[in-house]
Length: 225
Ligand SMILES: Nc1ncnc2c1ncn2[C@@H]1O[C@H](COP(=O)(O)OP(=O)(O)OP(=O)(O)O)[C@@H](O)[C@H]1O
Ligand SMILES: [Mg+2]
Image (cartoon, rainbow, N blue to C red):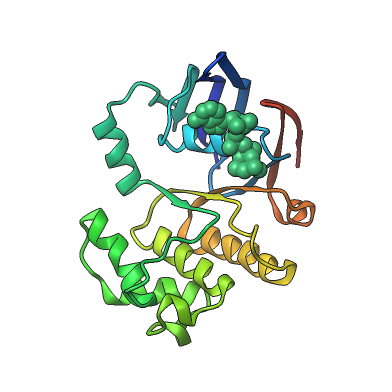
């Protein structure tokens, strides 16, 4: 297995009223293919900023993003949109399921966005992977927080992306449910060959990761197995 995505000498400055805020400082990270990497760090350390840059939602001020060794730093917005429709997917901390659609339809919606066939077997398979075969007709308000997050994961993988970014997917869940989500990521990695990069504050989640990066005030400070 090789490296799927790399950030090389990443800096991010945000313009603020009295100058610029230097949020990421010479960040060098590389993520193994088909592994679960955790990005940890205190609130404000730059986790979301880094994830958004790696996922092409935002751009670095300096530095490069490489996918499979190819420099994608300067791709056009349209190319970035295409990348996010096909290869890169996201799960956010606050689940944004569509309230008027049931679990099945929420997952199906991603196939519509990606312009892929609405493959019923595929949708059911993904709901099965996240352990929700018995909840497919439930509306979001009829699902627990953990179940909603699992639908969001099924939705994020149904179109077979290669890379899944999850920004604090377990922040609003209890530790047992968080553990279920982490184990589910491992199942998805094994069965779908996806690479997962997630952020968390939760110390207990580290041991379930294949790779851990720690951000402290915009710098990578440790790298542990
Ligand atoms: N668009 C922006 N403009 C100005 N400052 C920003 C912007 N986005 C983020 N920041 C600042 O950058 C720093 C890092 O933010 P970021 O959201 O990456 O932190 P985080 O590690 O994800 O924190 P949390 O754990 O609370 O989610 C923060 O101090 C934040 O205020
Ligand atoms: Mg964040």
